[in-house]
Image 1 (cartoon, rainbow, N blue to C red):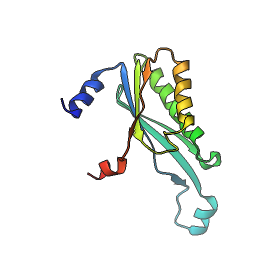
Image 2: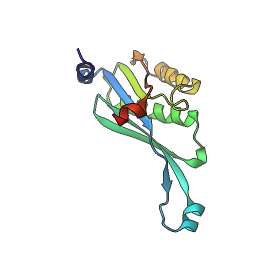
Image 3: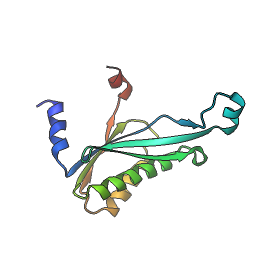
Length: 142
């Protein structure tokens, strides 16, 4: 059985949600061609985007640079996305979050604590298995 067959089988299972998420590019607002205007008024917007296999929807959370970029913001945004996924797909019993192995994004105690807190607040979720793509850029170039 190939990996594509395994993914196809899992995507048919509505009780197992696979949520792929990634911190997207920083969006600089407002956009202008005038340098003095651009540098005086520039504000960065961070965007965490996810896709759920159960309902085939995209989810997004965003925040501005006044909050800085830290693990708390990313974890809070990710939990907000999971809350929305569970609210719209009440039959989900297992979740598999997939993402790249960015240290501030995934591999830290803040993200682990957020996932444990999410599990404790949703007793219907039986299991969360976090998966990390170790070489995301190498796979994208192929």
